[in-house]
Length: 166
Ligand SMILES: CC(C)(COP(=O)(O)OP(=O)(O)OC[C@H]1O[C@@H](n2cnc3c(N)ncnc32)[C@H](O)[C@@H]1OP(=O)(O)O)[C@@H](O)C(=O)NCCC(=O)NCCS
Image: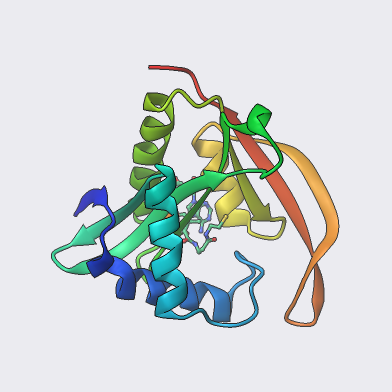
């Protein structure tokens, strides 16, 4: 397995991982599957703003992906803070892929001189909360009932890590 920058050729693999997460989990609060066009503009948007999108791949198969982008859109003062996301293909979770993707993403954030990374995590997503704790993230906010999916209210946790420069 290698980790590298995502290209257009990876988008079908990314799409399939992301839609499985949408359909089966509350890791993201979207209700409906997204299209290839949606993921294409997501990748192009990240690339044009200089934000990384990494994929873990074995041959042509995408095993997981991770990226970050703007945290808030309300001013230059937030420029050194980013919000990330990371998803691993169902059936391959808890085998170390997510950790390797995040280590690469954290390195990119350090290299870019960023100050803070934030993960927005469903409060019931114990695996992701443990995963982020292991990577040095700390819970800093718990929002009650800000999401709604699968006919229930969802709490959202923000976890942050201060990034030391390189
Ligand atoms: C959350 C996710 C990205 C973690 O990636 P992963 O490849 O499964 O995690 P790793 O195998 O790299 O695990 C690293 C550490 O995270 C923790 N962890 C991962 N999965 C866990 C689980 N199911 N239960 C408890 N801890 C877990 C462990 O501490 C683990 O370290 P260890 O193996 O030394 O015990 C992945 O499981 C995933 O994509 N889940 C579905 C979508 C999702 O929740 N995305 C995150 C949205 S915030």
